Image (cartoon, rainbow, N blue to C red; front, top):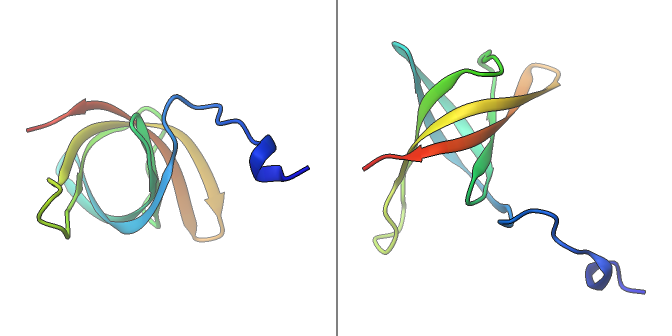
Length: 98
């Protein structure tokens, strides 16, 4: 049996691998990091900066194509995964900003 054929997406939105620069604004800090993947309700963020579960920030994901608007959203950190000096954060998109 083919694994791809047997796989059933468990999420409402699929995750798209984007691997692109992301800027977070948290309180009076601006943090440069990377958006690893993105879905309709959240994102995975890679950063060497320390964030905490429950932190809320404004995430800005620029667009490199004229046909797409940049993403500007309020996010909340839901999970933390550490890998050496790099942290991966599971974040929920709580509001899309204009």
